[in-house]
Amino acid sequence: MTEHAAMLERRQRVPVREQALAILFQHRAADTGQLRRLIEPPPHPETMRQCLRALRTAQLVVSHDRAHHSSIWSLTEQGRTAVTLWPQFKGARRYRGSEAGLRSVHTLTVTRAALAFVEDGRARRDECSALDWTTEVAHPVRDGAAAGERTLIADALLRYTRTENRCLLRAFVEVDRTTESSEQLASKLITYARFHASPAASPSRRRTAASGGVGVLPPWQLSYPVFPRLLFVLTGAGPLWLGQRIADLRAMVRQHPLVGQMAEAVPLGAAVLEDLEERGASAPVWTPLGHRQGPCSWMDL
Image 1: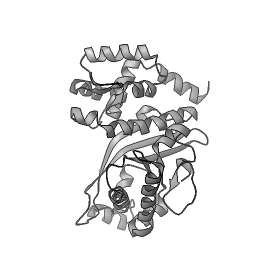
Image 2: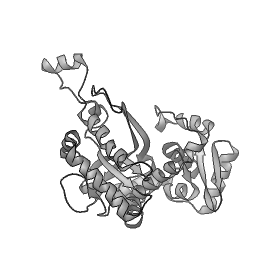
Image 3: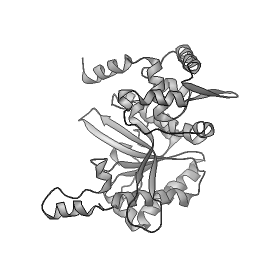
Image 4: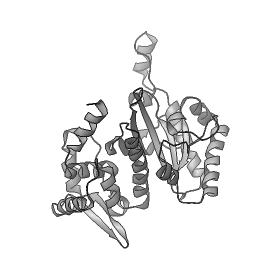
């Protein structure tokens, strides 16, 4: 049995009930169809419905019904408490979401983006499960600037392992639904650039480095061996409008010195969500935001 087949067999042994609770904890919310497709392997629709009804009866999940659309599911406070007791979620950050927030359009759109990456990873026989996607990942930005954001909150962090030549990839993902101005979208690049450039601030660590000890690490390297690539996923408008927003992101890279410096070291790209869903997240539908020209896969930015 290959390593990939063994991994799939281990995942398939996990009951649908446990997978559903873990996925809802990790993704905050999903509609019935999204949740079924994120589970591995996707269960029969009736099996999924029976499982969700049982979890709702146990007061672990709550459903939000929508006319002419499938229900939206999220964990109750009791459900979140139960999941944080599981060994794999030890130390996980608890979150409190309002009912409106957990069923917001943005939350479900982020889940759509996650599904595009997860299903593409399965098709490629790579390692990318629903639990390799973490929403709302926060990092303090401590660069000493008097103005600007103090905290970077990524819509999601993707952990992805290519089985061919065994390559571990990480990516911050920002999902844009064209609900804010193009300038506000592009300004997110500045926050990431400030986080990337933030110096180590501890005097004691500086003294250690100066005396020949362990070198001073930038704050981001306390969490990541390599700075994650940055991916913008756009939706909510026509091709021409989304193309203009991507052009504005490229302009920010050219015009802002700190963002340009980050682009020299960190792969940056943007794509349209509908293209990811139709052609696969690894298809050459990504526009590089740096100096590279032409569409490519997010893995090749």
